[in-house]
Image (cartoon, rainbow, N blue to C red; front, side, top):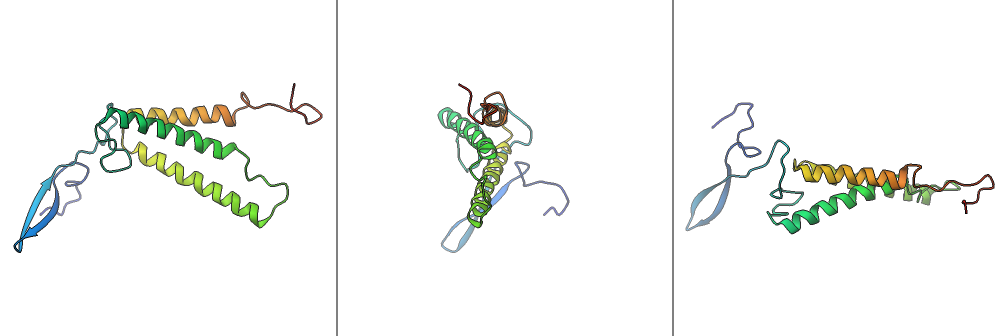
Length: 154
């Protein structure tokens, strides 16, 4: 039994031991190897957020990429949407601001956890989702400016 500071047994370095259901009072030990990348890699064989997802399926991998892109885009929209910019401060608007902030932070953590798959495709679509979201919702390129009288331009 190793008691050193190494990471054997974690992240694919060694065996994961699980107990199998005992038959007749005997205990059986099964050894499973789990490969988890610790460096960036290309390919559809990634584990993204959930056990067995996408499971080597190209369609599920592409769906995962689309979902990560859309969640990153949604995060940027929540940053710049102005849903909770009150004209008058009130407890209801404070609760709405807190709910939107909580949703945004939770979604940000999900994108961060997806990035921990170390898949380059996931990294690229997450960055692209944030970039496109900022371009659309945060930059002045896509925002209409108001005239001196406060009206949108014609």
